[in-house]
Image (cartoon, rainbow, N blue to C red; front, side):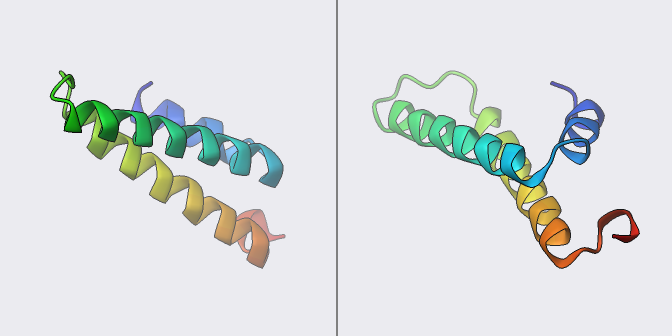
Length: 72
């Protein structure tokens, strides 16, 4: 998924959907780390992308909890 499309998708989700997606991405990152340890990982850039996605989701969640997003 492209970076811009990912941002649009997470901005349109509510808090519970974001938390669910966060859990899924963290699980995927854990699987990739296991593959890395077993020398089976082929796409190392996936780690960086997943970490970035996690950070972006956490930022949106924090803004939603504080009511700072969209002037709420």
